[in-house]
Length: 307
Image 1 (spheres, rainbow, N blue to C red):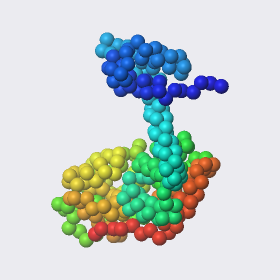
Image 2: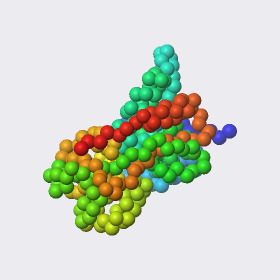
Image 3: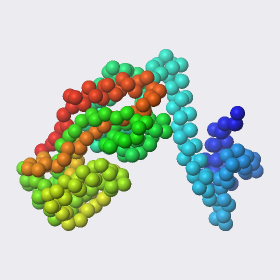
């Protein structure tokens, strides 16, 4: 049987990777440099790869070292979570755990209500909550790092089960002093010639493509685009008065200073869907319970729209 990685030695490795100096890392670890160097050499032999390269400026982490650093961080997170769970059981508390992923917009209105509902049914669980884009969530699911994920479609991997939770309208987010802020409702033609704030396609392919098709169908051409990766960044750009944005209606559940939201009239923006996904071979017994609560919650959910 192959010898497992020693977390203690991995801690030495992370110290060197962070300090980029064996001398500083040894001082931080309250040890001398020779035994630290020996531990790193033995680790390199164990994993079969060179982890550091010495340069005239100090130490550089190799590509293999960067990979180990990322994976070691996950191991330490798992170790920390395991200790917490064991401690909870030892104190007589509930020992269950569930890891949930969600998109930024879903966290504004839908997720809080769902968590309240689920916690009422299964009190005392330990939660790991991760806000990630949909692609990152599905990758996390497949690696076994997450139990359930609230994602945008499509979900095409055969190893995952996925169901649609809801479909909600989109609204226009406008700077408070913008010329469109005085409208009672917005029309797609109002976007022609405007500066539009949009999600970078690499981070939000589904939402990006949905909007671009809609604009193209109605021959609407914005004057230019600002591209962002995260929802908070999108709202910050709108709040700064640099452009307007089309966002899910639930995004208006959290008022943003300097931003007003307008419903669409006429050819409304296409509705945006939210799905729930999990691995087909789900090991966590709470996953199925959460899935059912999510479906029940979505059947009653109505996104709040601020006018």
